[in-house]
Length: 359
Ligand SMILES: Cc1cc2nc3c(=O)[nH]c(=O)nc-3n(C[C@H](O)[C@H](O)[C@H](O)COP(=O)(O)O)c2cc1C
Image (tube, rainbow, N blue to C red; front, side):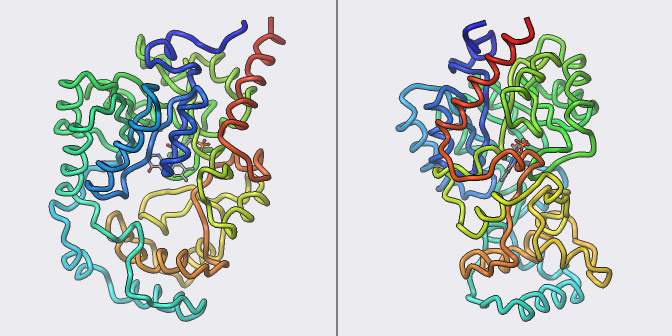
């Protein structure tokens, strides 16, 4: 086998069946230009920023494939009304957050953070989807949730609809809703993740998916993982953590140092960032919320609003002990600053070598 191209890469028009997720536009462009499919995570961006970001991707990818990812969980409030959400947050939770601020001297600069600049609501999600529909982007990924009002217009426009799933029941729901491709994302993965490990998950999702292509995600860090994913029946892979130490990601130096030093067991799953289980680098932030006296994190979007301003201030004022990032267990494989092209080259070369060694 001399090339990694297959029916999936042929279908999306990329050189390799390697999809790369990132919140950085520069990383997304670099993944596409390196032969993969860059997927831009835009869930925390305003509709105006999404419009601008998708124009940037279109301009810089020279006709190569890229996509956008939104997160539209069910059960969010109808309206983007911060006052209503704040009024429902218990005083004890607010006092706990203020206690963290005082303990670490986090300046109250009056500005919000990416989790609190707007309320995750159906109103905002519909505006985000409208901009995506008008943009001409070809791939729409849905990280959580699959509402009909987002899927129908995407199907009408012939977009490729990708659903991230962490359990067989999610896969069945996504297929019924119209997904064209599934990402089987296991427990190892960075950010929001479910309870089932990648090895246990992928073959089951492949069986459920039938003719639909499946991408393996969660812990994919080397060509050996990619070859193993294909052996499990996946047609490609979907990777997030591997790009975090790339120059294109513009990660803060303090966070970069934590990522470089981390072993797999230095990532922990916490609800403290978003209210849902989110794998991240262990830090004083996660330790504070694990303390026996800490309150239980609230649900989404209440936790976003409770802690969003503080998280923004922690990052802006570089309060090192509390700085952190989502990251998966594959972080152990990445110990230094690199570039997207170098990561991609390494992945492809090792996958080809591994596949050749098996024959
Ligand atoms: C920093 C970071 C942020 C993420 N944010 C999102 C997101 O907004 N939406 C989403 O669908 N997935 C998100 N993910 C998950 C990725 O899409 C992907 O499924 C995951 O990173 C794959 O596992 P890996 O981290 O082991 O490579 C994020 C992952 C990371 C590392």
